[in-house]
Length: 309
Image (cartoon, rainbow, N blue to C red):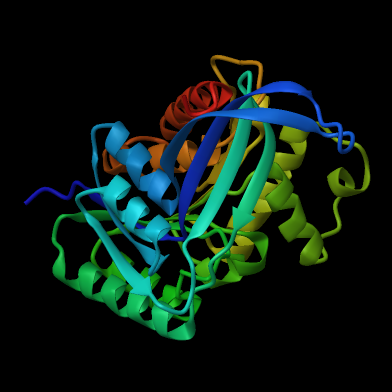
């Protein structure tokens, strides 16, 4: 039986886009009046990572928490086959509502859910059961937006269980949670997150003290993070410059092949993570995989520039 499935675990978000025309300034104060037009809803967070893997013509399953509300049911319907969710009566579904005019995002409204200990315990049990039972599983992907859905206390055991079965673990998380994922095969922060981790750990280095080129800073951060947390590889994204990696073979820069003007980066990180998690990339070099991830992120930025239209 081929190993061809990526299991994405993390915070599920419903992205809502409201398109409109900025017609005039309000007589009530110095803010614009937007004439509401069409509305679009799309999967966000871990759900977007799974959707992006499927868009690459690969198989993905999804595991997370939604609230017992209309937004949660809408998100489950959008995610489709392969989505296993814990429906919690103790939280709401996380929703990000973006107002877009002429392709530019002018405002975002957030409604944040917060999973309970019971929700996380259920997620942890399902995750471990799936790893032990599913022979098709090639990769476990953590898409951790620090909304509380990931059972951090179970992560070290999950990594051990995955490695004992030859399953890769790919991680995207917020700086405060990174230590839980020590020993994972691949960790993907952006440059700001990588620098925040180094500073919080008290790292002293010239590139942190002086103005430095982004890629020089990323090269130092990637190598330090890999050594500190025993990651197999660290990939630090650097915006238009591309991405830097550090693995057992050394460090390197993979430049973006198609630099583009950016007005909206929504979904770029999720698309990049999806390409890293692609089960087919397990047999490729990190350099090749990062190059493909750069292309995936660029495509997501183009779509976001159109306001998810």
